[in-house]
Length: 216
Image (cartoon, rainbow, N blue to C red; front, top):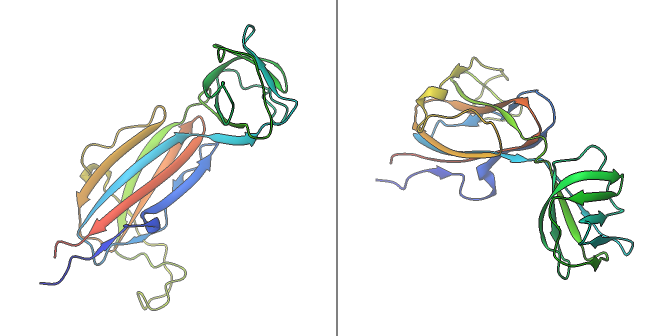
């Protein structure tokens, strides 16, 4: 008996990592399953995030919970979260209550002390104000041929006919209404499989990490 065939043990596990701000479906490429009998997948939807560095003109006043962060424009970002790292005393997550001007915000809580920053400061703006929502689907095809197939199939490229098998995965794949991470698995016999996330609102980052193996 030979060793089980496996894939997805390193960086090749991640087959989708894409940000979205609209409602266009995000679809993986066809994933070759000819040598594999089962697959487990992490279906992850994170908040959208943007990171920037601080400067010598940045500071926070604890009494008023007011932050001056000159390297980012906060217009319209009430309800978003800032994650502060690299400060002396202000590290943590803070929800934006009001935006006073493009570079000045007031948070719902203060850091506990005044502080002046420098370029060691790292701030991540997390879009908790615009949470992701949408639905997952998983399909299989027995006639898909990728555009760059080489000699893998010995056939001309073909978009393929795809059949929805979302219901074959366990546990049941739930609709996404906020940031979310689901693990699902299924046994299957199919030539190719693909994963789709269709956003309905909000914005975020979609990731699929899968591991497949043969039974023998």
